[in-house]
Image (cartoon, rainbow, N blue to C red; front, side, top):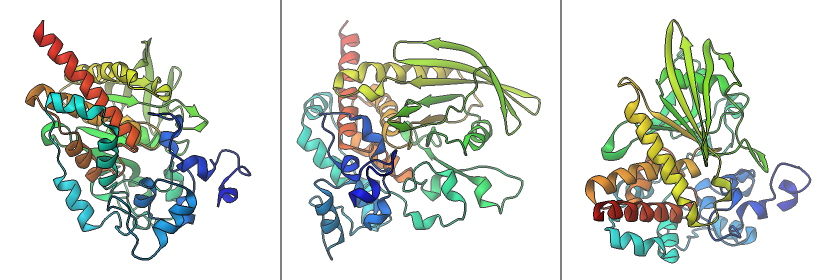
Length: 376
């Protein structure tokens, strides 16, 4: 298996690499890239693959022996659309008080167990059997769940390809509909579709959480140096501001005599995240985006969030945003509930156990900041 995917083809990571537990305790550079190999050749469902631990050999045996089960009960025998998985995602809950949150954030074992018990809800690639679709997906096994996918409006409604973008609407805090759109990092082939979506959905803000390259391409540079036109939409850069951990670009978009403003927060400090001390910059970004959202015109649509695949770092950011609101308004957080809710709408949100831990660290820090303010 290794050789087929390994060093002979530069740019396609060795499967051992791909799947091994990250060496660093939290946040490995390749966290987002774990699905880059051609999973299908292993004849394993994406759900099983994301949850496996151990070597490739054990993967193939575990997953393919008849009637096998994973240690935590959600393995390859459950297809991603299995009823039990869906029920788990609808009902999963674990409400934490501040003191429980602080204790749990450092309980690696409990968090790993909870993470691995939670179904990923990936889409079976067979659901999208359309010629030409390959060019519209960055990773062939990470696809948008059909019920919540963003459908691009087009003159020819029957032309599936022109309605398709690898993006899903996600609920926000308190069940707010279409609060976010989670999407893959645009590829050279999908830049036009991406801008169609930005305009169609009246998005006021884009949050980008990836570098353009990390070992290989993660995202196309979909914005201009000063101006460009995509699909009839004229995109102009107004200002670029460099902050410590992100840069902010403000654009004006013009189409059909209408003009709008768009902000892009490009957060680049994630790849070095190997320890929880990277929590403050993420919190700062969450707060900046909340503030900008509050100031956007009332007709504005969802905030677009993307990394490379649009599930890992994207899931961490959206979950953190929702959970900060929950903590402020209810005084408790339910990280499991939020993860389940996000995965119902886009499979794989919060992609690794390390990321799941990280979200706990970030919320723990946020709670300490909040109670510190209250004490003062």
